[in-house]
Image (cartoon, rainbow, N blue to C red):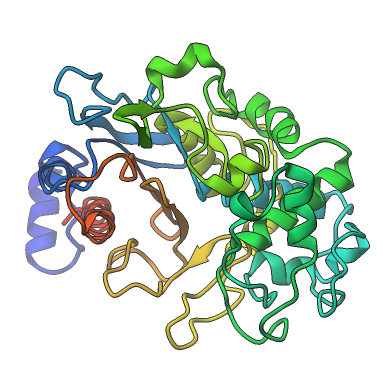
Length: 384
């Protein structure tokens, strides 16, 4: 039979079988380690997989620049996920609420959150907040302008759009902050409580949460320095800190392996990995991850909550080879997740870039590493 198949292939009667995919250190290790050698981050974990399997998982470097500090581990090291909070927690909460008929995407947000009623905001819809087309400015220094969580939220609610809602993409933390409070108002519980109940339990998370307990500190990758001491376990984002560590834009901590389970949930169209339990409908995951706003000028394409491709970067964090339906997100602390549904492939890279980088170009180097890892994963998936 083998000889016959070989003759048929040679004669062009049967297409040759694709070579098996190889996901190994030969593809990935030098890329991730190069980021450490170039001073962008002291440590990282990389997890690559499909909806039903993890194909590669490894830790690199150390939690700090000291060679005596712990080596990151995909199962145990906990990372400040930064803006991955927007998609893992906040966007997923909205997906659940839309499915349950408690939130409608094209309804003005003020319907659910009456305080969000400054001039010009009354027509801003939930969809526009998710797609970053609300017109709200990109950033507001809540941590310096407000002494408390309540006063910080009042400043957010008082913001006026700087562009007409729906006209253009302005990536803004304010959108996610409003959405996090909208989830709280609709459900009656804070975002961290909802995340624990609706995601942590079905996904089997044990070390992915807002406001991690102090007992976990030895396992948490530090993200900052204070008078020479590494800071870990407190959200690095100052606005999220002012909001009590729980906010729609930042605050979630998690391990590589557990965030990978979330990626698998998305690839499986809402089915919890390793089970037949459906957490989300497949049509919901498709609706939220399809391109909602095409790339315009220098603005990235956007899905609902998610970043779509092409991105707005000169060197794309998603690389150049992932498919046209790829979606993902990045985080300031050095985190990123890209999901290619056409290849049934996710690429999760968690680093602590914000911890004492040894190069002024740490963010640029990290983008190069992210893109190179994504391309390497795509080639491995294609068997090339």
